[in-house]
Each structure stands twice: as C-alpha cells, then as structure tokens.
Amino acid sequence: MWLNVICQGLRSKNRSPDLTSFETALSLLSQVSLEDTNLEFVRSGWQKVIGAIAIHNRDTALKLLNEEVWLQFIRLGITQPPIESPQQFISKYCVAPKRSDKNVKNHKQSTSNKKPKNKK
Image (cartoon, rainbow, N blue to C red; front, side, top):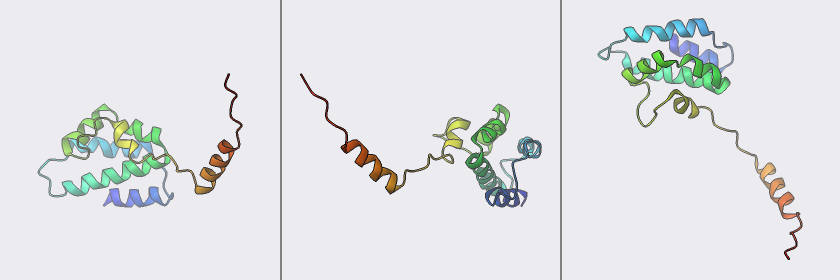
C-alpha cells in the first residue's frame, strides 16, 4: 500500500524523493521472502516507485540502487535479465525527449539551405 501512495505522490509531484525513508524501505527488502503472497505487489510497486524517481532525477534513483539493494532487486525478481545493472534498469524510465515535428522541419530546412562545398 505504501508503495502505491508514494508512487502517486511522486508522479503528481506532491512528494519529492526523501532519501532516508526510501533507503529505509529498500533495506527492508532483505526481509521479503520469495514465498510471500504479496511478492508481485512488491515487485510492481518498487518498479513504479524507482521509475517515478528516475523520471524526475536519474542520479537519485541510481543512488538508491546501491549494490546491496540491487542484489535484493535481482533476488526478488524486481529486475530480470537482460537488465544487468541499475543504469540499464533506470534507463528504461529516462527516455530522451523527442524533437517536435516543428524542430525536425526547421532542422531539415536549415541543412537543405547549406551551400555544397566546391570539390577540386
């Protein structure tokens, strides 16, 4: 439940990532069993929360995914191959903004207006 509330707060920008509370929550992952009936909720919740943090601040998300936490992400199946590192995990949330059609059109016009170089 906490993960859903936090995720909604992050997405609506009503909550900023408080490293201390996230670090504490992430440290509790070591107590989660693979047989836990709520494991799927834990998986999807942490994927959403880390994703929401990464969208706003990639460095903060990377800081949270230290070696110890990353091992728990792997153990619990929060991340799965082919994702091999926290950077890869976060990169799927940090997409470079696309250029608008207007920018693409202006770029094409500016490159087509260039004079060809004289060949000797």
